[in-house]
Length: 499
Image (cartoon, rainbow, N blue to C red; front, side):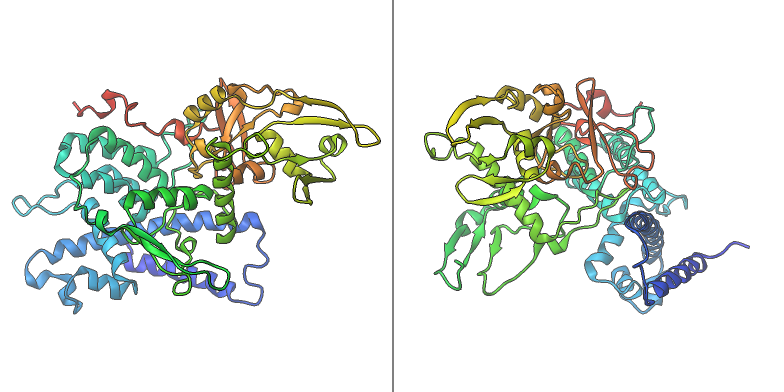
């Protein structure tokens, strides 16, 4: 006997109820080790995507029947005025979430054609199949098809069909095979959205007509008076300026998608510090699409610190600041040769009197250069020399062009902001050459030894191996940035209409 959807979902609910009950017991999840917690999160993401697919299918049926005769309308029978209200009550959710399910059903559901009584095609049949397979969530689906929908009639039906297939293939990880040709880890919602936008830039480079320019009149920033140790400010930024600021601050550390309100014509609004205390990092969006994004255990405050560290490093190296002591502002870290070789002891930050772990000297030396200054027993300088471990401007530009972003999957920090890491350590004989350098952001460069990520060079191209929870096969993969289509690099035949 076939179980109804409600009966199957009830069985799942009963199992999850038991798990929740055990979690609320005295021990809870305290006995689960770190690997077990991550594994549970990965499986939980898969369950959530399956539930998204089921709910989207059910919503499609409700919406389909609501368009028929009055006596067949499901929402009316449930005492609701439309599908959104029914979902808001049945799922106990808010209106935006309900509307997302309605939107997802509209692009994936096959409606019955009134003229023939047969099922018509879905708007995005390939992505609909990826949703049913549990490869993508509703959030991932909408992020992928959103740029295509925005293009509207500016692309043909044949082009949309090809893009639909490419998006579904990418959602399954088929764009990132390992050395054995097996599909790689599936992309996050943000990566899938980036892929879709790149495709649309190729097909629809001009985009939609610009909206009104009211923001030009309303832009401005006003600083208040110093109060309680801070200077409050308020105003409105033009969307382009706000996007640049967000890129400089939020996206540096780990650019997860944020469900932020849309930018209005007047721009982003700031409020004085004493009237608002909003933590933007607490609004991280849903990561979806197969395996989850790499785990980031940093607090919001730590992410902001790392973003600021990246901005400071880039600004100091830009050459646009006044010189200090006849040279660009440079961080000087001092350490003895013995401590540097052994990895023990402490290092000093010149000009501050502060001491720091010797790992700071290692990271500074990897990304920058080393100058050896030898002193005698009286403190007199007896020798000054430099090593050739600094990547030249030409080498750095080549690495930035090749890597585009920090090579750790899901990071997204632009390579122009990154430090260049010696894959094979300079101390172990690794050359300072483009074939031995990769772009790593400030955070991932300093945690590479402990995070479980590994980097190697193969045929002059970086390959990444992630923790077991991210890729159980532990295969080596080229960074997805090497497969993301650049607007000018998509093969013409890939976008040619089928047939």
